[in-house]
Length: 123
Image 1: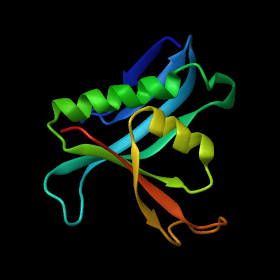
Image 2 (image 1 turned 120 degrees about the vertical axis):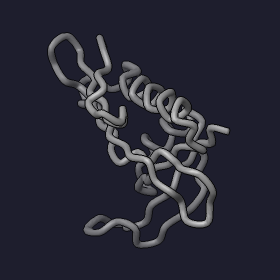
Image 3 (image 1 turned 45 degrees about the vertical axis):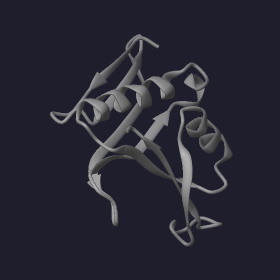
């Protein structure tokens, strides 16, 4: 793993490279949350090529987004994950995220269709 490059003017999208090969990406946006004060960073996508997993690339992408969210004064970070994606759930919990909600029927065309909301407070 050699570098994380910021793609967006708002500093909310990242590409991770190993030598000259793009091996990971993260894309996020700032959102309000229903019934909550302040703004939050929503991670829409995090992906690392299978051959490059377990090399801290995903961790570095999340840490870089977290740093940006803190600099922006955001309240926290949240994302959705499929309830049966145990690897992703373990990954995010290791980075300090907590399961805050279960959304029945959140996903379409997969079974089970349920998702979790994982959240990390920055305050």
